[in-house]
Length: 113
Length: 116
Image (cartoon, rainbow over all chains, first blue to last red; front, side, top):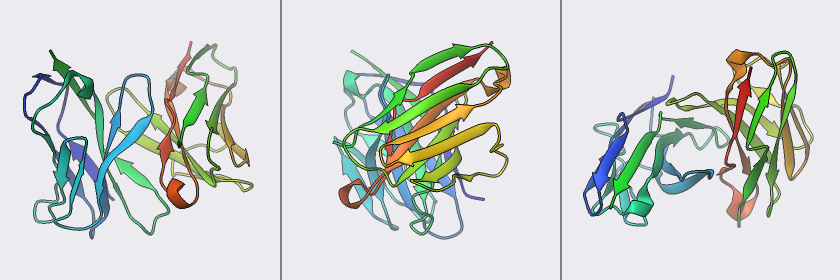
């Protein structure tokens, strides 16, 4: 079945460092791909998404490119801030599945000043 | 907009008792609500999908008699864990989806259940 694998956390960075959180997926075909973020005490929020190969999703300085060759959707940010500290979830969805999401394990990011 | 609340945020109960968790869409109508379970350092696992006014669809391996889901209105769904046991201790997260600009999943903050 479908699955999503994220790099293990936790990840700890200093402010203004470069961030990469790896995400790879296993699926037959080309699902839509998502990154969600969960700030402490809050619900998951959609951060960005890509619906087809080579699409780049971006939001709040974060980017991820849908790479079908490597079945990956790595999350990147050039300069992280303390306020980016959160748990990040990679997920996939089939548009015909009625919004059913398959999530990765989540990666805890802590950014220190 | 698109705020989803859960109540309670955490609950501790004795083994054998039942616990009800509420999920509300505060500023939109949710035609579909989803219930997830999350173990520490693990992924969110979909438990069931419920559409307003109809029976929930449970994922394989989820006991429908143990995890009762009711979606009686367009803004409220409840999950009742019946005869809870320590292995039911987990983090339960709901999400809601509506129409138009709300046609994606908006997540609640989760409920931490601890069964003693």
